[in-house]
Image (cartoon, rainbow, N blue to C red; front, top):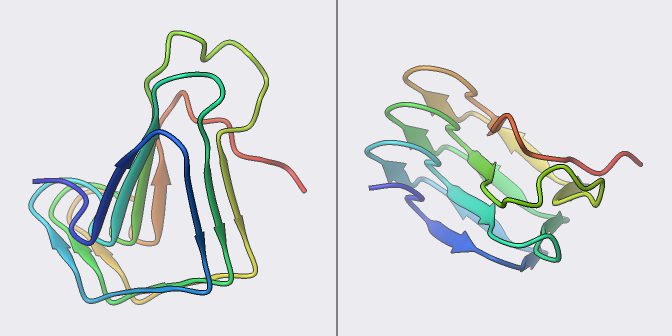
Length: 107
């Protein structure tokens, strides 16, 4: 199971929220997000992601861009004014992990 608290593929915007104390057997203890087209993105603002656990990757959050359009430059992940703390991952990315094709926004 992935995405202990939230599992979302496609466009997702999360604001003024708390993702707390969730567990995933694989990736994304708090949440797992991803995109399947070049217009999809994950936007997180003013949110706390804490005390989550993933047995493999991305204790707080795991984001993967699995689109065939991954060569385009449109950002697919943005996190601003948020707190990511006290998460655990059994393998890597205790706070969060962006998979190799992810394109984070640079602000």
